Image (cartoon, rainbow, N blue to C red; front, side, top):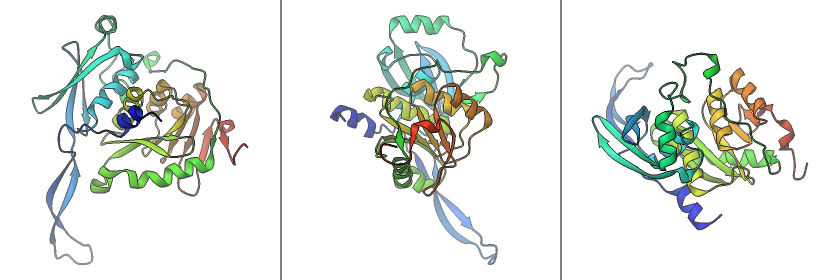
Length: 285
């Protein structure tokens, strides 16, 4: 990995505290005598994405890695096709939240402003508000390159992911999305109160670092709905591993995109729902 890529994948750009300690009162069922305590809570904040001075969407996010979020969201929303179409991202204070001002390349900005947006937060909040069934988002099909992934590599990534979730250790309230190389080494982890946002942050970091989508696989801690498959397919990764179960539409989309989808993934077992030909039970097999 190039040093510049490592720097991007490991950097953080927290624009506000990501957790907040609050006082609590703890009551045990067997002993109703309450005791005072405190607990770290994950911060949830509205973030307004703005393109060319025109507001586009307000997403509820954890206020960290926001530049990554802007890149990943822009890709998975279909606003850009590559990182070089974004000239800069500026984080600003707004009324009751933050603003992400995204400066697009002139040609891309004109296309964006001329394009009617289907709904607010198209892949970020499911499909609420689409005009018809034909409006369901679908990533462009692509030909996947590269070899398979060993089962042992997936297990290695899953075992490492727990320790890598720093904010979740403090709050027990956020999702994570991670990128692992073919050996199962975690190269990047992003966390957010929103499962879609966490994946967008990860994809944004990988875009900015110039990571080859065929050089590893994605691991998510959340439920695997079809949007998570679509976002991963948009980035171009061929293997998606989810700790929770997939939906039926997620499996259909994974098969459509010729993706390997593993879910209900634990340290000792996983379930393969599509693309089993890409998994290697042992080295070279």
